[in-house]
Image (cartoon, rainbow, N blue to C red; front, side):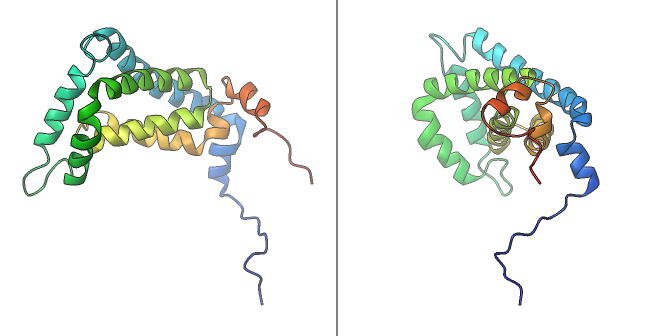
Length: 182
């Protein structure tokens, strides 16, 4: 009888290994990373310098965005689910100035992290999380594309930042690019 807790090494399909573990394809991830990072950096920089997200009018643009999202919670087939509308009303609306700063600076940080290839997997996760929230709020635009690319960058985290700062940062923190001992 087989011991279910016995260690078994499962092989990756060759294509998955090539894309996610082979540094020869890290240039592909560099292109994806810079595209997604630039999208985030551009959006975040516009918010940081625009005045409606940061500064004396902080929260004004976010309040408008949420107001539109809340109008999409009704009807037979709502674009925004009622539970997400309740979340917006109870958690975000009372603190729009704070969340406005979080969104604006979060977008800049995600963009910078992806462009520089610094903690790529973490930056991609937070980008995916923001895309998911924008989609849940009924804003489609480019969010599905960025969400999909962020998910791929998360899966390729070992390889996606290899042509970036991760090549130096991650080994310093004790993760990939070490030849396993046999």
